[in-house]
Image: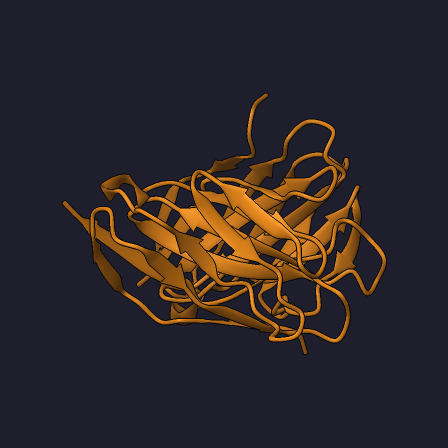
Length: 116
Length: 111
């Protein structure tokens, strides 16, 4: 079945450091790919998404490019801030069944801790 | 626009007791999901509704879990009887298009 694998945490960085969180996926169809963020004490929020190969999703300085050839969707940010400390989840939604409302399949999450 | 509402936020019960969670999706969203998030893992889908019909409940432990969405709006998820391994955060999400919006979740602790 479809699955998502992301790097284990925690990832600890100093403020203004470069961030990469790796994410790879397995899917039989042509999934949409997502990064969700969960700040302490809050619910899941969509950070960015990409719906087809070579698309780049971006938001709040974060970017991720849908790479079909490497089945990857790595999250990057050039300069992290303390406020970016959170758990980041990579996820996919398979469009095989033809709907825009398909379930999300999540990775295990990566805890990012940014120190001042 | 109001977000997805869930209650209660926290619940502590003993094993073999029953518990129910409530979710009110964003107005107009036809699709509603319940996910289970065990500590240290990503959310896993339990059940998906389209209006008041079930689309996917393949990962719902039907011997103890049940869910309904009678009028196609709010939904309840019930566990009876609870086991220790049911300790988790139960997330409700809804969508009217391509983005799922998540509620704050209910943290269940089974002792």
